[in-house]
Image (cartoon, rainbow, N blue to C red; front, side, top):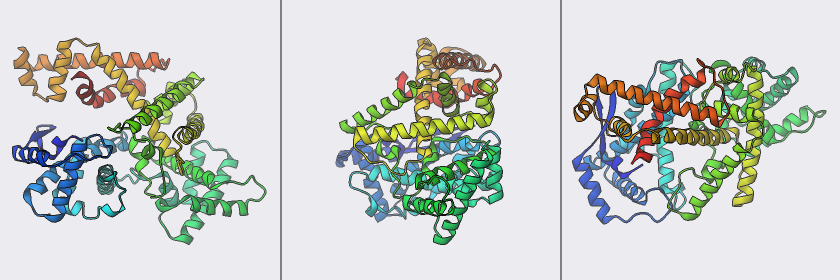
Length: 486
């Protein structure tokens, strides 16, 4: 997040959220840049990290200072925008709540920065990780402040709940119904119910929240399961954890058809859990070794996914994690395959990818990764295919002529009103709108053509996949223009 976000404030104009520079805040940040040295640990912007640390110390010492408080209001509002965009996909298509509604719900937290950061414990942070940890703390706290309100407004208790949490809160009847709905056989349902019973028995005995469970807890549950099922093959703690994740996913499919977002890997709060995303950050830094590792990891993901032998496996993963289709929609796009078949294929693929990436991290980086779950693998897949779609959209933008790219830049990046753009190019407001619509249609068509060619897809003319393309292009267009056009 650039330093500018410490001196730009919210401005709501008609139906758009804009950001305006506050001259006083800007002058103060510029002055601080003259007297503060950038941090010497690997982050995307060492100046940004240094300014944030200084302003945080000032907030602790002078919580009522109006200037410092306003800097942090600006910062928190920007993070509210980011968190709202991440949570929005969790709602699916069944609730009439848009980004603006989410943003306004979250922005309440920005009113009192000192109170918001009151429980940020610097003593638990390793040296060289202050700012990444601070950003993570901010986003997670905003998420947990927003989700209860979101659940209240929508009447839906699913958003933000981990699969393990859903399994813990459900009855035996609900678990059985969800597993049968997802296509599990009677033998599988019986096995999962036995494991769930052991899990509930253990949870009630230790009286702790499931998000604090360690690998030893799951091993203890496995020991109880093996004791009760001595005639069967012994299972491990990892097996139990995987089964409970499957149960939670089945419950989610039954009551709230899945539209999992990249945010899902934040559901776990266990301090002992080491995820792939923590060990291999997706954002490159100024540290050359880390940047090299990030590049290697991304290439390993690409090699793994591109190396899949079955074209239908590639199609299945892209439709689910690239276009974020529900499993029933994926089944329809792939020629009417039954939804339970899609579910089983996805589960099998996820476990294969989980095993391959875990082995790669151990062998190539000499990092021992423990407690990796399917949430982390899904996050990796969402990120990979998001980058693929960004590449397609970048190609589509590059194919436009310079005038059309400049028009997109004025509207999406500079955020000029249609009337102003019309005056600049000597066109009426309606002509500008029509031209923008025409350009957007070109981008949709070009991006769709690349997707179908890349994955050998013949998408249904009125299917969910084709209908999702305009929303994806619209969502990513501003970012791609900022990154690649200038």
